[in-house]
Figure 1 (cartoon, rainbow, N blue to C red):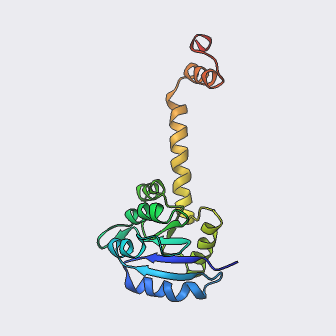
Figure 2: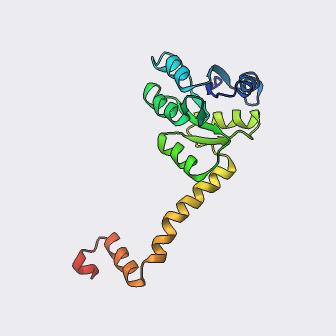
Length: 174
């Protein structure tokens, strides 16, 4: 199996350069085929669809815009590729916004090059690579959507809801 081909969208030049050097040597290795510091540079380099890559590692905060603009752009220009956020931000609203924008995964920059490379391989297999704290945020978000509904409905309202879900008509549920 060939090495996954990765692009980096990271405005911290030192970090981008380090990843360009370390990811090909990581275990499992990945091939870095491009790296840019801004939304504008990424648009210029990828908008024609000619660049072949499997995964885009995208920082959220870029000097000229937001990384989610890059994620949305790449969904259109490279629908076969996967975007994975690589950032320092693990707030709930950032995680949810990234997933809604089309990111398949969300990793924190505290991950080692080997961990990042392993998560890139996961993304290529169709998995959803997440840092553990990000997975916890998503679990709490899902729990928060379900549990309050149970808490605000009376026992009778829950019975009616169950009957409606089972196919009973309004009269039958009443």
